[in-house]
Length: 153
Length: 133
Image 1 (cartoon, rainbow over the protein chains, first blue to last red):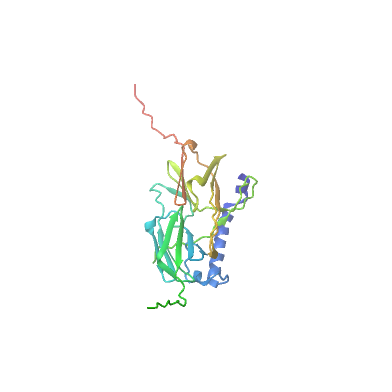
Image 2 (image 1 turned 45 degrees about the horizontal axis):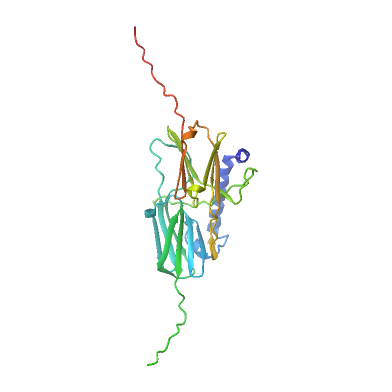
């Protein structure tokens, strides 16, 4: 463990992180990397990072947002769009605290995600556990041809 | 001027370069806040997906190590978007303060680890009164 620490000069680690952040941002703006599907690029705001999994009847969206209170989180579903809004409040360290390091971000965020299908706004389930937000959205049944039954009288 | 907006930072993966790192899985370096007051050193570490009993804290030879393990659950279905990776967390720090190791406390809530390391009470300078006579 000691050896690992020696080989990582903290100054370069910081610079590296900054460089990678810039590359990511430039890549996003120039559209150099095309994502799996479009909606990610509609908003330039990138927080929080999302993972979306499609199951047979639902979409499961997960985000890692540690240290949130549910009253500071706002989830809206409309049609095929999910909007996540919130505020991550900074930790109150008290008046006589002096920071040696401050990496955890705080502030407001808003992010919209358009899903490939319409979802049922009545059947949305959201859970927040151990800092992970999990939203399960049920697909609206596809409106296909309806079979009409004939009632003989 | 809008409120300050958070920017997402992709997770930094930790390269296990030492043989002590025999655990399986991918490790990321958690974002931390470290601050000190007169009495204590506090470390806050973002480790979403880690429950309280999956945190390991090790302090030896002035090196404090934090390890958080996540349970990997297979998501049923097709991944449409994967902006972040899931994995464990590891970070170590060199502690230069004198700490009262027996009084270190840790709590884990909503994916945030809060480590409180009380400092050794320094001798408070006193004025010694001199009595005449």
